[in-house]
Length: 257
Ligand code: CO8
Image 1: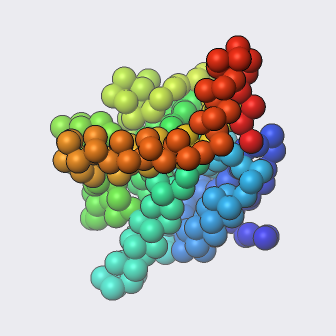
Image 2: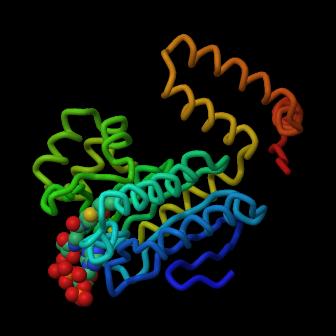
């Protein structure tokens, strides 16, 4: 499918989703969000995409936020619909039974930070700056940032980032657990390295483990532990479990389908 604002392609088992509005620092217009949602549906179904990498075009930004010009004259009802479009789109990343990696090269602000937060793993270049500056615009994060940021970095840091609007530089982002890796340049190469490692493992086990973590985070601890056991049992209905354990005992690498 041809998109105007998104590029979707696959190579070597990786699905690449590139936000492609470099002149607006990849700000997410309604069209971009809708196309991102469609690209995520494609990636979820695509057997050639075992792992998905989301990145931004142009070398200056991952995504500099939701499109401010599109939001300027919105009514409250339109703002609600726009927020829900962003939220439901980002939820597709959380719910996808595949690992999604954000490769951040430059600004990841507002809705861009929230997009990265929805991903499973974040890799950033040293020049990257990540933040939620919405309060400088008279609004606050509306693509689930108020929910995902405190879950990732804790409420103290999240509230400080919210209220000061300050952009966190890559090194600090690593220190506070906001990103997994910082590289001098080319975060895409680091994301590809991680994707290659992931691709060697059982996709069904990764999907079940991701589900257990995501759903468990929304449960009381002992319920989450119980839920883990149910999903663990499901792993024993898979071909991958038989292959993985047989391969170990036969002292050979597993050959997951
Ligand atoms: N929306 C629209 N256009 C943008 C955005 C954006 N978020 N960010 C940058 N652009 C555009 C600029 O307007 C400019 O366009 P033009 O060349 O036509 O003037 C172009 O990108 C380049 O930007 P700058 O000239 O500003 O580049 P600088 O290097 O001087 O600055 C910054 C880079 C610091 C990233 C700066 O562009 C900036 O501060 N951008 C806005 C960042 C921001 O506030 N993001 C949060 C937006 S709000 C949001 O994301 C809310 C999410 C929840 C929505 C809920 C639904 C209602």
